[in-house]
Structures are given as C-alpha cells and as structure tokens.
Image (tube, rainbow, N blue to C red; front, side, top):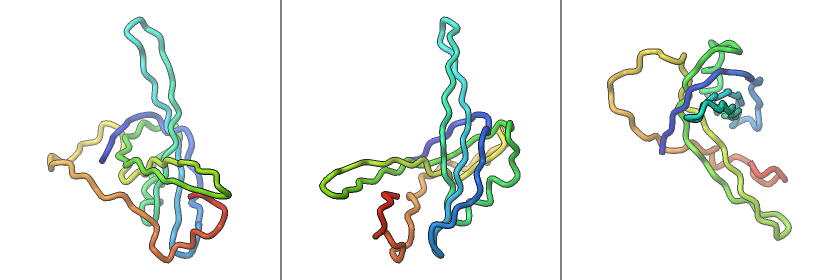
Length: 126
C-alpha cells in the first residue's frame, strides 16, 4: 500500500551504513493541520530512505515544503520472551511540494527489504 503526505522538511540526517549491503537515511517533516474551530496542531513525522534512494534527499534544504510518497512497514521482534513491534515509514519518492506529477496511474510498489544476506543476529530489532 502506498501513501503520500506533504509538509516542511525540518531535519535530514546523514546516511547510515548498517552493513556492506544495507544503508538508510532518515528525515523528518512537519505537518500542520487545523480543526474546523481554528485549533492548529503540528505533527512531526520521521521517514527513512534506503539503498540508492538515500541520495534523493540531497537537493532539498531544511525549511523546504516537500511531498513524500511512502510505504508502511511493520516488523515483529522477539528477544528473551519479550515481543515488540516496530514500524517504519519507508519513503520511496521525495519531491518539491506542488511539483508537476506525471499523469500515469499510481502503482503500489512492493516494500523493500534488506537482502537475505543481511545479518539480523545482533540485538537490534531493525
């Protein structure tokens, strides 16, 4: 399933190399909304880009309004009998807000997962 959201880029972090076969880059947008009675609320939402998509954030500056297309990924993790669940918002396209988008129909892309060789034996759940 694919989602889209627009907001202001407020943080962008350096690319993290997790292994020789997997890297990610995180960023945060600020989304402002108002209720009908005028109350304004602000959400700060963290996304991640993976692999070759990490460089897709380079052209954007802090404070710029962007649109993010993303997938939601969830993972179950168990250690010492304790079960936890983690979610990631995996961005697959970032563009300047209001830029012209192709009239081609949107397709849902399959979620990206690390290669099978990715070592998951450490204590990190992601």
